[in-house]
Amino acid sequence: MSDYSATGEGRTIVGLITYAEDRDDAKKRWKEQVPEYYIDFIYEGIDSDNDLSNTLWSYSALSRAASGNCNINMLSRIHYNYS
Image 1: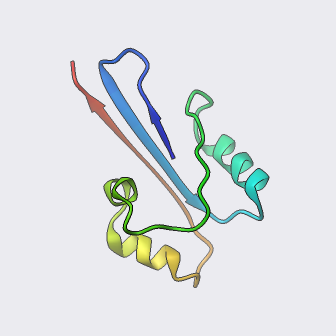
Image 2 (image 1 turned 90 degrees about the vertical axis):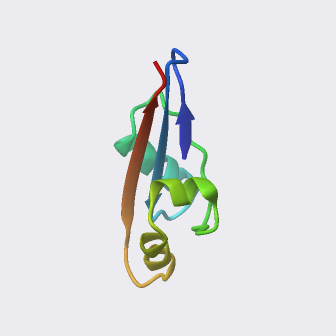
């Protein structure tokens, strides 16, 4: 996940839930799908009780992803413009 604000006029939150072999593979997948100016915060597992996760995805989508019954790639981005 990443929380980015360049000029202070807005804020963008990006999250990626995907299968990865290890931390290095997770970083590689992040860099393939998210612009480089977003910092990566790598977490293992899916936390459906996390406020940020619940902002980016529905509880149903998180529950299905956490079930382990599928290979998943979920990318979500929300931008708030305060100007």
